[in-house]
Image 1 (cartoon, rainbow, N blue to C red):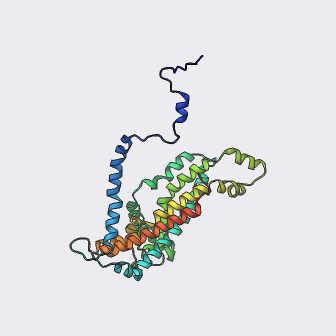
Image 2 (image 1 turned 90 degrees about the vertical axis):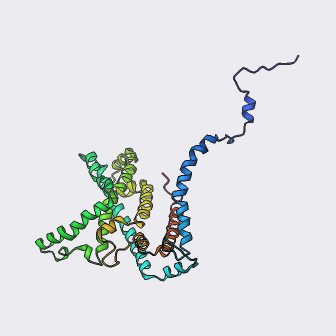
Image 3 (image 1 turned 180 degrees about the vertical axis):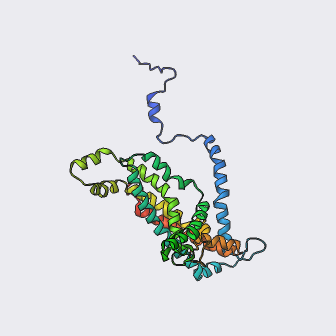
Length: 308
């Protein structure tokens, strides 16, 4: 006697389901249609202008009019230009110092604002205010303070060091830029550290306190290791942002005194305005390659460590 197998209407056969290959789910064409506008806008806004700029870096173009192809001449001159070397040295030194200042200040503030103190929620709101203010406005306000209020206070108190503006001193103007940049950058870094500290289970601190760990030991042996991943994030993001420093420097010193505080971004933009379009495009291309190499170096150093 033969056995007949009947399939229930609307129910797929189990063996047919098992025969369907895994990972072979078909992508609906409508998804590509939704992706297309963003892809076109991104391509027109970033890759196309970048490629056009790289092309013109091999010419003698001034931005408009006729041009001739001159090969690697702009790059050869840029590598011998002391003004460009000075801008690179200033920018990288400024970025390193500012990253250190911002992360130390933000971490200490985050520890205080996540401890058992009153009004900590209100204080958090106060400390993030600089993040929503334009950098150029902040720079103009601090420029007035450094040029007028602080020297007046120095003269009244009889402190010669404060009697003159830091912005007029070629050796100390960078200190003012670091302070103002850090004042604006600390809130964003602070929020990331607060998120990291709040993610640490309270049981860990209770166990350490029972074992007799002091506050300093809890900070160095529990808090710091557990927020190391957040430190990596803040260092990478901060260093990338500070390499592109422009608006605060323009508002405070405009690259002066002389060219003592001229960043790479400011050198490039100033060259564009002065008719050195192709030459500064070569400088911008070099800067792009350097930042990409730094990004790969950071990723290789931090790969697989403290994944969040």
